Structure formats: C-alpha cells, structure tokens
Amino acid sequence: MDILLDDAKSEQQFRQILALIPLAKNGETVAQMKERGLIYKVNWGASIISLREIALKEEHNHLLALKLWNKQWRETMILAAMLDIPSEVNEEQMDYWTKSLESPEIAEILNTFLWSKTKFAFIKSLEWCRGKKHMVRFAGLNLMGRLAINEKSAMDELFEPFFDVLSPLSKDQNLKQVFYRSFILLGMKSQAMNEKAILFAEGLKELDSLTSKTLSEMILNELRSEYVQNLFVKNT
Image (cartoon, rainbow, N blue to C red; front, top):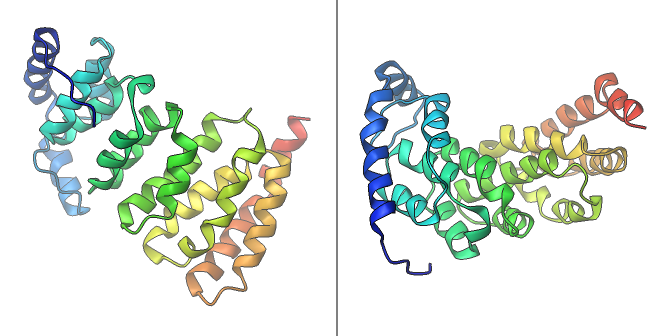
C-alpha cells in the first residue's frame, strides 16, 4: 500500500478513540462471541451502535483508518471501516485487509461501510468469489449481495458476470448461508435479474453436489414466492 506520513492530528484522534473503546465494553457479548467461535486478538464486546456513535463524532480520515486497522482490535477494525474515505481506498488495501480476515463479522462490516462504496467494488467482489481462502470467498459473496442492495439503479449487466463464478461456490457447505442470502438479494434486484437468477438456480440441480441441490430448492422457493414477485408488480 502507499506509504503515508503520520501526522499529529491523526495520532491524537487515534489515541482518543483507543481511550473511548473500553468505555463501551460488554463482557457478556465477548463471552457469547467466543461461544460462537468468534475470536479476536482484543475484543471489548462493544456494540455496533456504540461504535457508530464514536464514529459519528470523528472526522473521516484515511490515515486514521489505516492506524486503526493495524491495531487489530475488533473495535478498531470496525471503526477503520466506518471512518475511512472510500475515494482514497485502493485495490491493494482492499486485497490486503480482505485476505487477512478471520471473522465474517468484520467482512460484513467492511463490505457495508467501506468496500461497497469504492469504485472497485464490482471488480473485487468478482475477484474474491474466485479466491482460494474461505474468508475471501465469503467476502466476495457478501459484497455481491450488498451491491445488489446499494446499486438498485445500476444496470443489470454489471451483475451478470457473477453467474459465471457462482456455481463452484454453491458446492461449499461452509458458504451455504452467505450464498443463499446474497443470491436472494441478487434475484430481487429487478424482474429481469429475478428471471436470470431463477434460471441459474434451476441449473444448480444438475450439479453433482447435495449442497448445490439444496440451495437450488431454497432459492427457487424464495425467488418464486408471492412476496418477491409482488415486489416487481409494485415497482412497475
């Protein structure tokens, strides 16, 4: 990544934030996360709402975000996503942070608050869906779903390349839930995308994978449901 010179203002913000985070600690949340296998280097158990309150009082600052990420506390990584400036993010940073992910929580936070707002979002989502590491593929799928929400007015053609990379991911039992959630969002973007998503889901039945076949049934039931189909009627 680009080397940025430190400055007094960013360092002061950084120190102030580090002092605020322990004030939002929640030991019960930490214990619950450990039970679910969410282990961090340091975890104060602060809620996303509490961290949003901290972020709203701070000026967005790219250098500050880099410093927060490098601290590697759960809360500093979340605040890094909230306080970075999307226009100053480059592909190298996106790859470096994403490839170092160990938690789906941080992957989802990054996609929601930062990656989906960058000009590289579509490129990286597709690229990560082809990745080798589980968390990279998870991030790619989750980002696809986030883009389907955020970019409702974008051309469907921007989303069509995803159909070329999703079949192998449908076979991975460990990606089943994120695949389902994100694919449903893709199929709800527009009526045309709904039809293409249904056709793709029909094809999953033909794959030599029980997970793919199960996903096919789940997806078809949802995308053909009265609720989803009525969404398109309301928008016409």
